[in-house]
Length: 340
Image 1 (cartoon, rainbow, N blue to C red):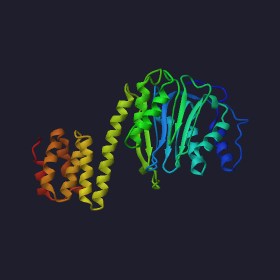
Image 2 (cartoon, rainbow, N blue to C red; image 1 turned 90 degrees about the vertical axis):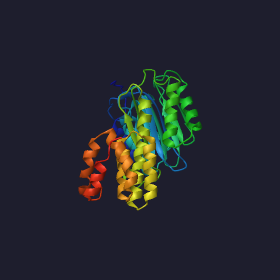
Image 3 (cartoon, helix red, strand yellow; image 1 turned 120 degrees about the vertical axis):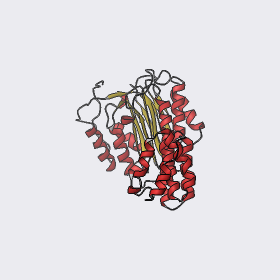
Image 4 (spheres, rainbow, N blue to C red; image 1 turned 60 degrees about the vertical axis):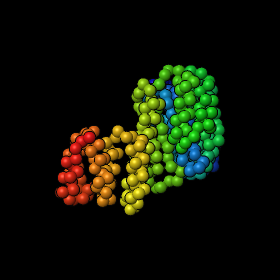
């Protein structure tokens, strides 16, 4: 960790929040300097105008990059804070946007209160799609950013200055949901050189466009690869797995609401994404049994028992929890299915 004289403290930036909320100019005077953590990276903050989803995606040659860089809140905004990172830009940026400040206003206020602004790199986007970014004059080259419609891409300590233009082009030209388009931007950055030091960690955070009042449900993707030789490849694997579990959750909800056909479609979609997952296949089979479709469930149970016999041991334990009918003959028929 490297110490830079003149870096802003959390208390200093908190003063900026109070000042901006009151409509006053923030003050940076009489605040002690604090240590800045050198977290050099490339990232994107973005919004999907079709559904309001907000997100941050990032890769770096630094351990656990997502724990410092990525911030987002449904219905509020998203922040990426990097270079000699001050994480309080994330929290306080969201605080300001939550009380009605635009992303450009929030970022301007926090920068004005920060004597270390010239070694920061920060991007913010609010729920209305207003975007702002800052690359400090003392950020390590190659460093820069590009602000486009509903997104900003930014990078520092890169092998060359092709990184952020490549990210911008990839995001604008890619198809799919917000997560997929942000991943395309990260892939493009790496393809033209990426971080001069190499690769180590990556993260993806996407929140829903409309807050539910239950923040844990608003996080559609909250994935981190902390330490890996190919973090973007691993992040894509996790995104695929998360999509499958999202389908499983949607299937459970449909079944709960007595929409059996939709539930089965969701379970089938989950299995299609990760066909080798015993978890997906097993709970699909359980759902079929609970819909009185035992015969359809049996081939699925056989597949699962072939993957791992412990699922056969688990099955008789489910009636007590209300997850399968309390019918010994039915349970016996299931567990006696040959593994194949």
